[in-house]
Amino acid sequence: GAGVSQSPSNKVTEKGKDVELRCDPISGHTALYWYRQRLGQGLEFLIYFQGNSAPDKSGLPSDRFSAERTGESVSTLTIQRTQQEDSAVYLCASSLGGYREQYFGPGTRLTVT
Amino acid sequence: AQSVAQPEDQVNVAEGNPLTVKCTYSVSGNPYLFWYVQYPNRGLQFLLKYITGDNLVKGSYGFEAEFNKSQTSFHLKKPSALVSDSALYFCATGGGGSYIPTFGRGTSLIVHP
Image 1 (tube, rainbow over the protein chains, first blue to last red):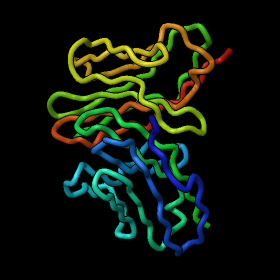
Image 2 (image 1 turned 45 degrees about the vertical axis):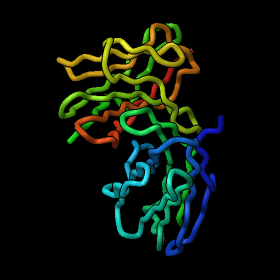
Image 3 (image 1 turned 30 degrees about the vertical axis):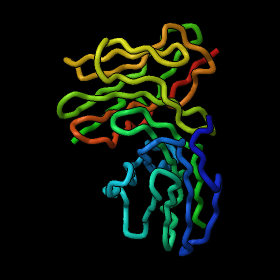
């Protein structure tokens, strides 16, 4: 079946502009995660959705970052007033929930100029 | 709080030799442990996991990992390395009531022909 998809694959934006990143999880996966991966570094947790529960936003680095998910489907990560330090690969992952393994999308490479 | 340490930024091994990529963890209660692999320009892929049961876990591509509770380790191993195993490997841990895994910084595995 189809895996996790993300769009766009690449995004170049000017400092100060807003960007929206999209994630389509695997159908039936109740859990969805967003991570940030800076060049040469590990994964930085951003936000976690589980079904219809309130999301865990504890990893969002500032109030410029927000995310939404409609039910158990598509999620969007929005970064307002982008800064150069926001440049990174943004990864989305979904799972069946609990302590199950995650399935990752290919990521969106964001470059802020 | 949970944490994961991958003490080696890079591991070099000759093709055909056994390989080990190290991981130690700290979790309250029973840990859930994962290994993921990231090939160049591709997303992360799940390799294997330990939830409970046998301490030796077998996964994809001939990899295995050994859970050692007394040493709080979950080292990734393969009896005979292939050049195609060259990639970035991430250890992750969950548990202690949190469904948000913590990822290590990653270890770059380089297999020389």
